[in-house]
Length: 260
Ligand SMILES: [Zn+2]
Ligand SMILES: [Zn+2]
View 1 (cartoon, rainbow, N blue to C red):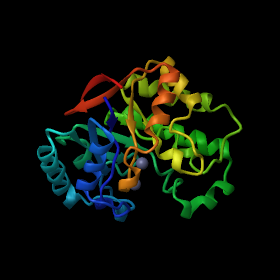
View 2: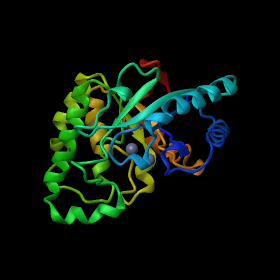
View 3: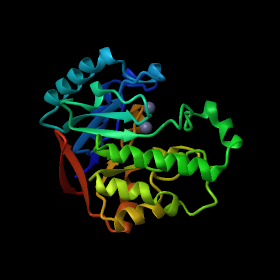
View 4: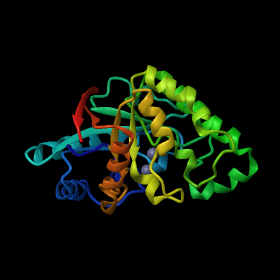
């Protein structure tokens, strides 16, 4: 089974290509289960995500395509939700009829640390502190229990500013919280096309994830048709080399393990 659960649409204002084109490309690549997880609305940085008013329209669109393509591919409906203290909105995380919610940290306080526009901030602060702050946010996110999947676990490495301290030590409490909350970690290939040129999470962290018996799933984090299925072969090889043989898919927030 080939799974790809993290994909965007033009509704976030920073992606290109139609839903139909993404799905057709996924079918062409032999994807069996393909999920959309648009950036959920939030009253911060609102332009680069869905608006609250557009949520039902987005959901309807995906469900319509789910029907249209039901004989060719399984389409899932999800959201990628920003974890930013003070901005968690009940309209997103409560009673939403979706297959899964991805919890992601893209902001430390209000610093969009993965945005090249604000890269200068890395020079102003201690890199170990930045990394710890990031993984503390991941830990808090996991402890809320609101989410099913951890989005790009070590996104903080995106620009290759790496800590002095052992990353496994920095991440250890976050990983414990993820385990305790029964979350799944996505193997997100977007890192392979960013300056770090490495899967999220790194092999080093994935080994710890495996030791903790935390399940995984697969994501291309596509923001364009060309990015659908990006790096899949490489990602599968890494997953297998660590020892994984099964991945998780979801239906209405229920996990299901499948062979990949
Ligand atoms: Zn995005
Ligand atoms: Zn993201």
